[in-house]
Image (cartoon, rainbow, N blue to C red; front, side, top):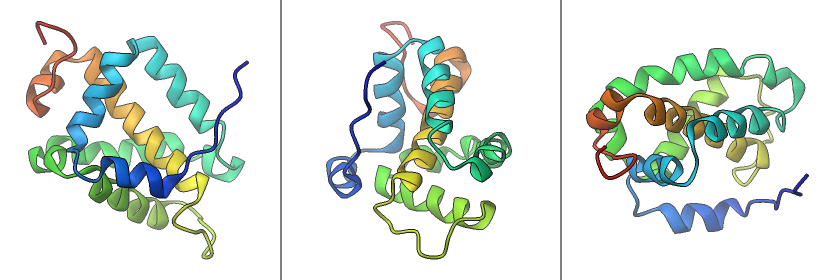
Amino acid sequence: MNELTPIDLEEFLEQVKSRQYKDLIQHHIKRQNTLNLRQASVGTTSLLPEPLQAKVVDFIDHMNSYAYDLDFWALNCVDVFSLIVDEASEFFPLPKDLKRNSEVLFNIFQIITLSYAYSASSRRKMRKFIGIKKGLLG
């Protein structure tokens, strides 16, 4: 099994600060097939502390309400990261001293991103709604 390279969260946020969130979703669906997106989401969930793992599905359901807001997809990735972290802070029992550069926060963001990518990969109507394409024909 491949060893995961720790993410430099500040570097990641710097790289994506001018990208719309929908472009990050498109990036994922063009690089991975639907099954791989699902496996990546499950694998990333396993990296979270156990108390958080038990509530991930409920958190995904909670965050899915944003998927129906067209303005959400036009936000830049940093704004979406902050939104997801804020929502996670309310939803999960996160330690008060969790730093912004925490692996846990990135993994929560990644789980939501991969979940959206999985849904977009398997649902043409969703791709059309948010304005991305899976392949040449959409």
